[in-house]
Amino acid sequence: MVCYKIEADDIGTRLDIFVQSKLELTRNAVQKLIEGGNILVNGIPSKTGYRLRTGDVIDISLPELSEAEILPQDLPLDVIYEDADLIVINKPKGMVVHPAAGHSNGTLVNALLHHCKGSLSGINGIMRPGIVHRIDKDTSGLLVVAKNDRAHNALAEQFAAHSIAREYYALVHGGLKEDEGTIDAPIARHKIHRKKMAIMPDGKRAVTYWNVLERLGRYTLIKCTLDTGRTHQIRVHMASIGRPVLGDAVYGSEKQPFKTDGQVLHANLLGFIHPTSKEYMKFTAPLPDYFERVLSSIGFKATSNTYSTNAFL
Image 1 (cartoon, rainbow, N blue to C red):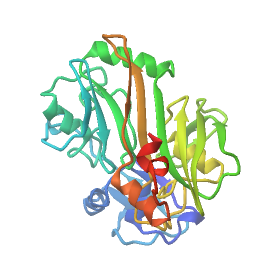
Image 2: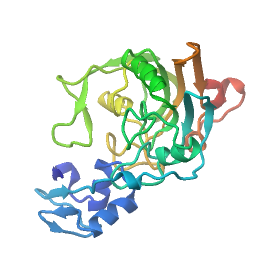
Image 3: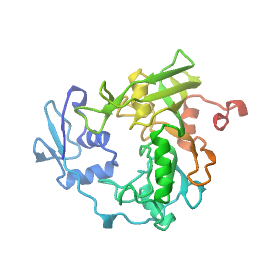
């Protein structure tokens, strides 16, 4: 069970919206949990539209998933590369990586079980077959998945050594005076809001390098390179310097100027040494349509290849 005590910033927020901001669940999944009595306000069932009040205590009970629920599904996959050891996927925004409470179907793992005919590494157990690393549901972009345990171990070692190249594009609120910078601040799970991460003195070291690509009035398009890969790292780090990622209602403002359905953040580059050939491989994924639509709506106009969004790759 997860428990939250309502603070001043959350007063007046709808119950379903509050729960969705704390958990990686769809609005429909949250509503089903509320209707099923899995979410209580001050110990009693409530309605999805209930407006939170000072001192309210929200208890959330998430049902356990069983092995039988992890089923192959014939879902569209944007496969960038595939061989006998691994597969590189360009994950769309809105797709959860692996099954969890409220997401037993429609995940990347469900799609991979169908596509790979069950040929995935088993090191991370039945819930996360093949999954070496992950990106958030509302972050789009590149993931590498292991098809066997040998490949999984080799890739995991590279992640642990911080030798895998990872770059992201993000659209953030506000301007940045410098053209580049480094955020070196430890990250750990929030002491109160357990679904959030925060900068904590006792957290694990986290390093993000950022570079300005375009200054767009009240927003800035940046490239972030990760030296470490902590949960929500870019989102937490950019919010810590007052430049939260556009669309991020968890670490930024709940009031968003665009209907982005989450943060405007894209994992555009992934580089690693192949477990078998030992060849260095690098993959890129162009900005997805949702990202380009937001850029266009705030005045980014591509007039040549130099300023084309794809030219950043």
